[in-house]
Image 1 (tube, one colour):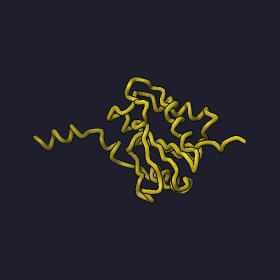
Image 2: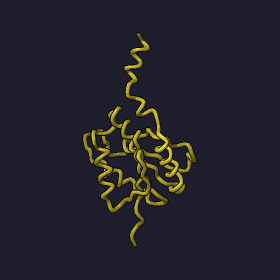
Image 3: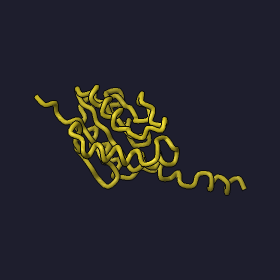
Image 4: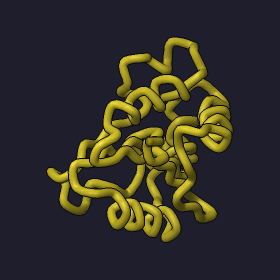
Length: 147
């Protein structure tokens, strides 16, 4: 009976406990393009990172930003862009993955649809640019400062 109950209690968690090869490829690309000392910002902590040069980067998540996304304010773009601007040098990168979305949904870390709105805002932003994308992940970086 306990084993059967465990099956139902854990149902759906495989979406956040499994990383696809595309997600891993995106994180590997992130490490290739981000200079040491860069800020690596993710939607949630659920992604395959921190396996390389751990102390060479600053790791943050949207949920850890001062503007608490759980407060009901679903505009995540302001705190994301603010923290990225603060880390302009050597670089700031935002990654969002399939497992981030599943984690936010299953655990209720972020308001519903807030990641979709954030991504739409980043796609239209003049501050950041999409530097990598595959079917399960996208990476945004700050655009070079205008002179």
